[in-house]
Image 1: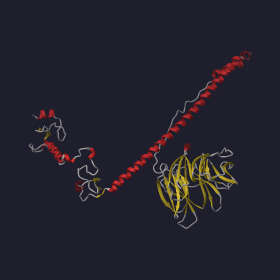
Image 2: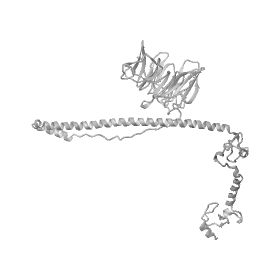
Image 3: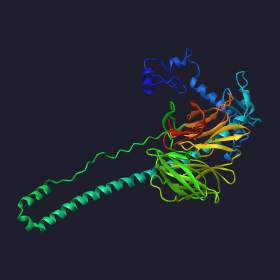
Image 4: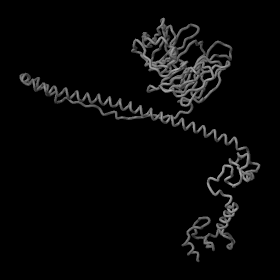
Length: 495
């Protein structure tokens, strides 16, 4: 067969797959068509393609059919699937090549000095730990996905309800306007005899009715914009305050507040068997009060709620924040039972809230809204606590004269971060998602106390060295009240 006939039958070389155009070609007895470069100088040599196929066949022929399992059920994990040999004990692993060595032949191929061969056991343990962690993360993702979708659904329903109410109001106004005009028309016709004698008044009314129009703006159009954020760590990035700024001195207030929010502060007054919650507005420092249950134990006040633990019944209850329009007495609804201590609570937007407490069995309990999210065996004394505004609970422990800060995952209760500090006094959360820490300065053997800001990466910044006796932060603004030990005066600061 001539070169032109071969090129018409085959456009590319069977070996290098390049075009045969302009090259010397040859068709071999095996029917493979090669260019001169692939065939080499010896045109009588064997076909390189067929030689490679023969090698592959020889490799396969080394294993007889008896080496292969006859049935899939006969395949055992005790057999090396690469060499069909009995699995060695122990199984090894080459860290250099990242290869599992199951039999002697596997090991023989990794005897180079560069190969670092170890037992496969730690690799298998790491794999199992990884599978467990991934399974737990998948479960958490599933719960979080369902929670976010449910929140979105509820928010959508609230938005639709609000829109429907606004459109209903507009509809009523339009109907009322035209109903009023219709009544005017009817009255004019009925009183035409009387009005005819006063043509000027009649014409004036008709002219007014002719020019009167109703309209409304169609703007703005519905424009929904939401920012979906993926948080790393235990919350969104905190805004680092630069300094403490004095707002005012609270000279008329004598009792240190138990709550601070909504541009007001709250104090407790006990009279015999009754407990009263007092409300001081910063605008005028007028006092309002409402009566609480006499069985009040610990309680926390947020922007919209009052959370309380009732001592005799060990129940966790909540009520709407009654101020600035208080009722004579607070009415509480039960959230949980068998609660021994109420540690802290915080509130997010859209009325979401989180509560950290402990039950009578000594377990930490975390509530999201009215639902118990998780419980955790507690083998430490909770010295102080707070909840970040992203919903992650933080506790301060005091064991063996050592203080530790522990951050928990709000979804699972797993420990996200734990580390030791010098002696603590208190910790508070800020709406910017940071924390305030009041630390005793033990290194200088002084009674002075330092106030620090800690962000979401646990980096700390000194805000002030002050003689602080008491401190409380606002539930919905970066304001705080500080009471000094020296002069006992209370001052309102802003971060």
